[in-house]
Every structure is written in structure tokens, then in C-alpha cells.
Length: 112
Image (cartoon, rainbow, N blue to C red; front, side):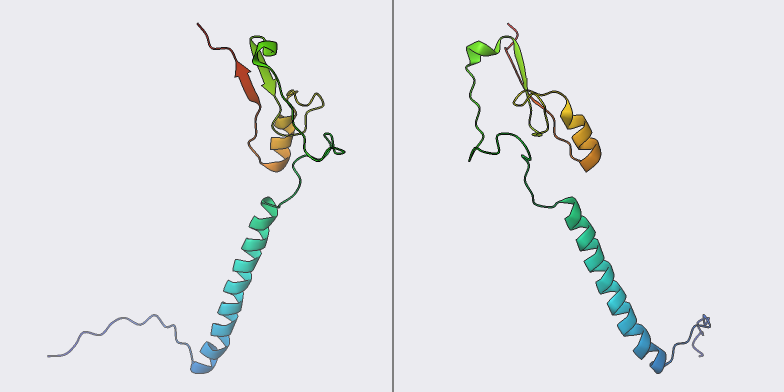
């Protein structure tokens, strides 16, 4: 009984070619990994969120009494509003420029 022969692909690699190809493949894979890590890290850089509001203060804190709010108040969470602490919609431009998804804090009275 004879064993069936498998079709050949015509692809042969010598030992010398393998000794060159293997290190090249390893360096390419490592380079791709580090490049990917670098590019992903650029999107999530650590940095200040507040770039211009009350910078002379060690901590920015605002306090409001619920009775003073009225029926609804919209507060900034992106730190870009020209009317801070109130939202002026600046988060829309911020989100477009950075890919962020921040929006305002909305506080309103519960419907009776």
C-alpha cells in the first residue's frame, strides 16, 4: 500500500533564509507593538483638565443651595465653559477636538 502524496506549494525556504527572516519578523512585530502602544498612549495622555479656571486657587470648589437653583441648572464638566461653573456648550467643541464624550451635569426638580 502506498501513501498518498500531498501537493507541494512550490514554497521552499532554506536554513539561511530562515535565519534572516526570523529576526526580521521578531523586530517587525516588536516595532509594531511599541508603535501601537505609543499611538494609543498619545490618546490618553495625563494632563490637567482645568487649564484656566481659578488657577490661583489650590482647589476649585463651588457650592449651591438647592433652593437657589430654581427648576433646572446645567453645570460644566469639561472645564472649557466661558460661564464656568455653568455650561455654555463648550464641551461640543472639546469632544470634536479630543474624541472625548463629556457632557454637562443637569440638575432639575423632579416632576410632581
